Amino acid sequence: MSEAMNEANTQTDFNSSDDQKASLPNRRWFTIPEAADYFAINPKTLYSLIGRERISPNAVMKLGKAIRIDIRRVEQEGVRGK
Image 1 (cartoon, rainbow, N blue to C red):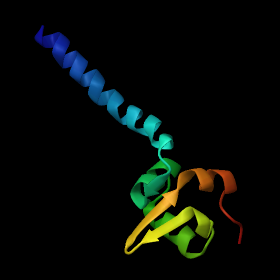
Image 2: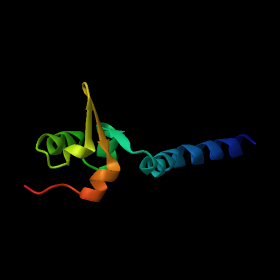
Image 3: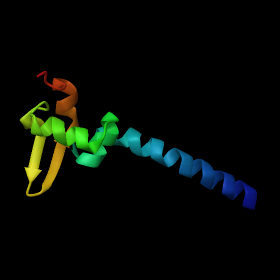
Image 4: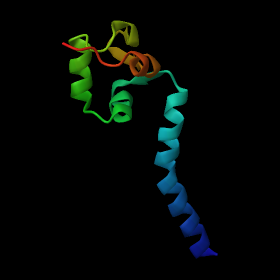
């Protein structure tokens, strides 16, 4: 019984990150680290894209020091050219 529980826990731990990524698109606003992870880029790159307005200002919400990214809008509009 102990082996079965360990196997189930291992499988659950392995799938938990996959489940988390699968559930992310259900949300609209992401933190910088979450959005960077979603787009598979470095958070510093995301800050740079925001600062150079390569990501639409309509997809960025600043709340004091906190920044949130609208993933759906970024996916629809893409990243702007130079």
